[in-house]
Length: 250
View 1: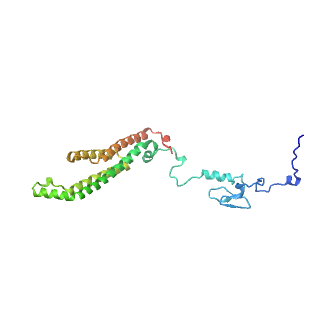
View 2: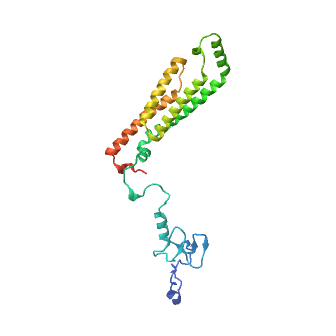
């Protein structure tokens, strides 16, 4: 024998009761979208926001000023501080700087930047090292110069510390300028000239003193020469045959 389930009887007055205008029945459950303020408070009347600034608007949750519009406008809002061009401005031809920063030139870009930094650091370090050794060996240099003068050997056997420092500073300034030319202008001429100067200096110091000097700068100029030539070739090809749409990858 099964018992029949009976439903509770609802009075006619409750059935005919209507929901007041301007609110939505939530079946006596808490509805955070209607009763909770995003600023951090509870209100007797439902409050919603339809703009990102948090200004209270109409309480119609299904209308134009409802809560859904708040999220839609927030997600569609643009950041004015973004330096990138808008979607309506693409595609367009990249400038040389934008093309240099594009992902397709990552290898050439890294080689150019690293090579120029190595050249500048090596040139400055060589000046400091030369000045350190001349200062440290100053007493021995004075002894050799005095002996050469007493023996009448002439100036060819004397060590000219001032001339050495002047030559080293001049060479380092030239290398620093060439390194900046590679870094800022991506210049092939600066890379090739620097490669020639460091190569001649390396051969000269090897013949006169029997050791290598500034070989790090020579290697850096070699990489910079290859990278700047590769970048110039890609830029020329892009100007003539480049597909502008494929360059916008960010």
